[in-house]
Length: 284
Image (cartoon, rainbow, N blue to C red):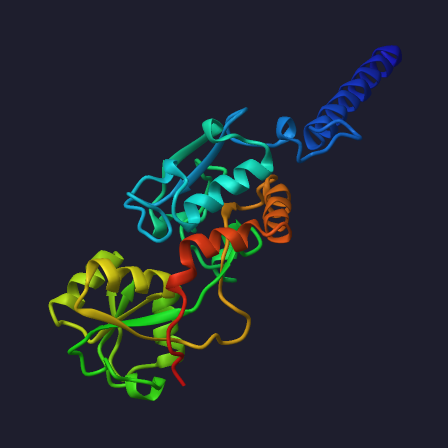
């Protein structure tokens, strides 16, 4: 009986040792000495493919022709530049649709990263990971040229205005936390709904990011104007690439973003797609 117990104990030790070895191998999928950010080692959803998400429709100046695959618009170009820095060619990029308000919800994701003017916030970072910022952004106010706030130059002049923004956005947060109007802000499911309310005269103005404000007033609401941009408060607001929480891809994506900053690629893309869309008076 004693020999039987000894034998059983020996088998148990061997099994535990094997399990520990398998756990170590699973925790360290990249062989020692190899570059974990080499394209063949990247922990992407589909081998040989980088899956990128954005919303639909995808608006200028961030994307062009509602087609992320053409690589045009600021974020379209940034997405392919990040892909290239990671080692993926254009033909190895796959696009999927992810609604803005769903992107930063907790849970697993069906993409490697999402690019959709998603501002980095501490609250969102509780549920998802963000890359380092790829664009510093200010919020701006759009109003019809006949609006009572069309000539405003100070935030104090906006306190009694009826202001709107898309739900879940930093634009809405800016209204609530910094403008603090006497009337509750009007909240819309999409920016399209906010624009419709503005055109119908239901609200005095809407808050969006500055490049989007220029596009809306130049193309979609020619009777509107960019009244002004709001000053940054604290650290600058930044857009980041969004990844699943605790994504093993994050460090490599950050390396790619850092490379694009250091070699001037991000600056070149911004000059091409946003240079004429970032100048507006600043509210005092």
